[in-house]
Length: 494
Image (cartoon, rainbow, N blue to C red; front, side, top):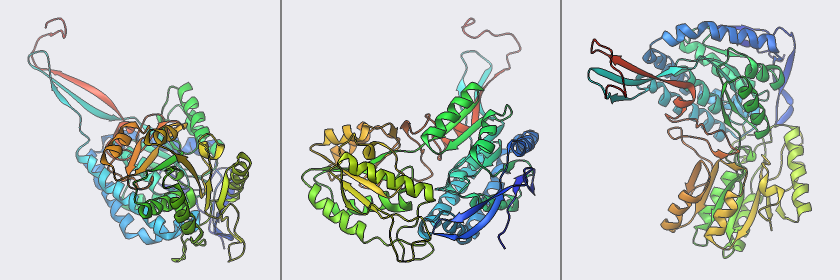
């Protein structure tokens, strides 16, 4: 019998007030129903926000080192349950087991790292311009945080939001993606085991209009942290702005690898394969454009197509599989549409481009690894985020032209360059208008101790991970302590 999972509100697992559920389907095998989850509505959100609001003072007043200790226990439990979490995640969203293990490991790394901020969370002490006066700044929690998370990294990205929000003293309501609620349910259970007090963390499953939007509009939610599409993020930005509510957005990319004529082509092809077809191309940092120098274009293309054709598709739980399915039928149809668009625009299809036949793949949402060449920088397949296993090869004649092509995008998340020229590498770091740049590596593989995020349409300037995540979830308070015993007037007495 299919298991039914509940919402988590005020430390209890509860059914939605709607009495309705939705099914979660394995994208590698549509006959495999993973579970039934609550189809919640505004009333459920209200209840969860009330729980977080009521718990906020007690959690804020819990000493930050104590908050960090609870989160350290979360990391320990993640380590212990890594394999079961990864296997559930592969079954739920499709990417291969090696990648879901990496997803869990990223959450482990982030949680260990950020739990330590319970004993740091530094402000500044600075000298006063007046005698017998002390000046410092401290971080204050915002209050109630609403988190809306995507399906492609169903544990790592929630950890990016939940752990820094909690260690800094906020309470949280999270809405997981409708395609991957089980992973977040598993995560919540770990917080329970770690001893997080009731009401501090709440989870409501359901659809964006029913659950996400009420969080945006609610007056007791102080910040909305969102990862997802540009279109949805833009709506959230407008909604939060109309309520004078803070928001943090991470909204995707059209990431590119530059291949110069002195590049190690074998290494480069490895990076392109990983960047373009890892997670079936369903990463905001996926490499979907390769800007290749004309002198090595022919050789690189031959190497890439040969390797792409050899990739094995199938259920991500099979250790022999290289590429899992797309998340659902809608995603599959979207990629099919972009194949038609690319052909119509005049791009040349070198391999892939369709739904695979046979080999036991008929029950899943699979799509062949696809390589286009003869792509011009302004074609739609070179400008729009496809979110599938499709990479476009664009020829350039110089380093400067390559930089210009990369930067000609509405997005600015990740970029990479393969070259043996150290001067060009450092020039690329300076010139590429992206939040992340890799030298002789793919566009994916960010580490949690550095800021993650991008420029332009990728986000609104905030960065997740690292210590910069604290900036999202805290506000600064400046403190002046005058122990002179008399009224002193700054800027006047001096």
